[in-house]
Length: 165
Image (tube, rainbow, N blue to C red; front, side):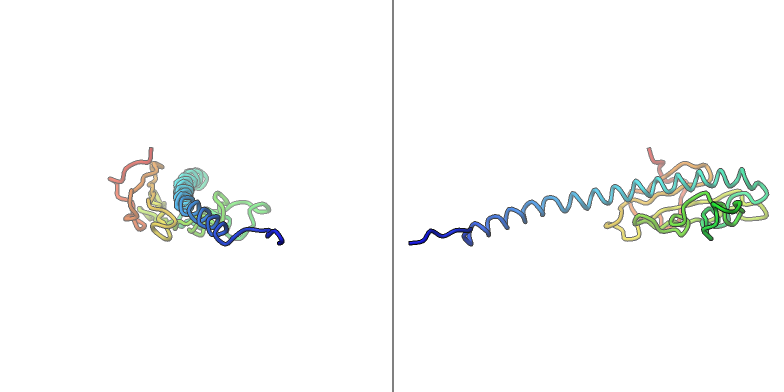
C-alpha cells in the first residue's frame, strides 16, 4: 500500500474556518481605524483652511477672506511659475480646494459678504456617514475647530458646537 500525501478535507476546512474567524475580528477594527484616519484628516483640513484664510486676509486686506474655497488653491496649476492672486492664492492643495478629500465633503461660505469679506464658516461632513466618518467638523473666522458627534452639521456651524480638544 502506498502512503497518501497531502491534507485531508477536514484539515483544510479547519484552516479555512480559522482564517474566517481572524478576518471577522480584524475587518471591523480596520474599518474603525479608517474612520478615525478620515476624521483626523478632516480636522486637519479645517485647520489648514483656517490657516490659509488668515494668510489670505493678511495678504489681500482689500478683499478680506476668500470668496470661495477654490480661491485658496492653485486652480490653474500655475503657482510655481506665477505670482498668487486673490482668485488663485496657492495656499492649499487643489484636492482640498475642490471640497472633497479623505471621505469628507468641505463646505465654505462667506458669512459677512460685502466689499470686504470679514467672516466665513467652513465645515467638513462625511461623504458617506457611518462609513467614511461619524463626526462633522467646522470652524469660523476665529479659527477654533469645532465638532459635532453626529453628522448633523450638513454645511452649517452653529456657534454652540463644541470645540475640538
